[in-house]
Image 1 (cartoon, rainbow, N blue to C red):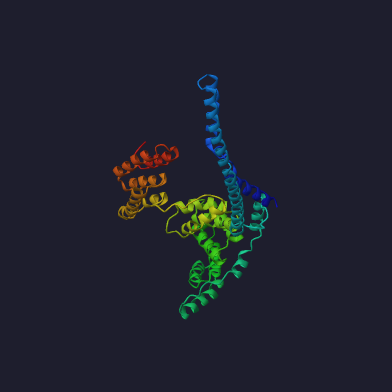
Image 2 (image 1 turned 90 degrees about the vertical axis):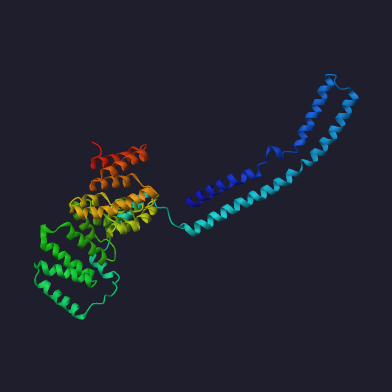
Length: 398
């Protein structure tokens, strides 16, 4: 009820702001402007008579003529009264239209009947939702079946034999690794996740982040895209080893998005979406979902276009063979330079181009970009700090 009262008061306030000027009688509508002129002339006649500039007879004739004109002008002045009634009807119509449009708009795109949800209540509901999620096994049972895959019968028979063989060899890493791989080929993601879990158990401390990430991917797919408590535990383990893991950060954001915390999902996804490799599955997924999460979190965010190699990609290229490195970076740098020249970009984009030229050893072009960047972002201290760091890494400045 409080909402409707507040909405009604605000709607009426806005409507009255528009309606009041329509019904307010302006100064020039108080009467015919000639009335004021004739009254001033009568005053002037009295003043001239007192100063002896007019004789009484002439003054009386002038007063009579002006009085006649004043009477006629006064009758014409009654016309604005009818106009004000029209304004009153127009103002009433404006109030009704604004009220009707407001009500219809809210009933169509709003949430009529939806109760108040204070912030603390929403946070508590989110935590309860997260704590009461179904386990991985239950999610796998209710997940929609994957589309069928057309494979030879002898291949399927071979996998059936492998399924029987692997449990008989609980410590056979190769058998379980092959089973995990072939279960994916058969779209049996739950079986693949179970096999990959056994692979990690066999490897023990030798299991790396890549092995754990593969298991995480399989668990989420097997659960129909939902992040189970077991998957969350695996996310934490991955982040404890590599806090920059794209997969772990993406899936943690997905967990928050699924438990009504789009604000936290947005924070995790932004770095993944903006700086992750373009051809990476987790980067592409984050880019697809981040704008919706930002909207639901009340954040005005537009996903920037991918504009070239990330800093991580450029650093990786430094370890490649010179020819391969130059071929890979050369294409990316040419594309990035062309985009910046035609469309402009952020300070981070300019910094990437400076760094890329530095890796290629093209210091002259790097210096040109550095000088142009100072001209563009010289008034922005934060942007200049980004550019200055890139210039230092490229060896342009101390």
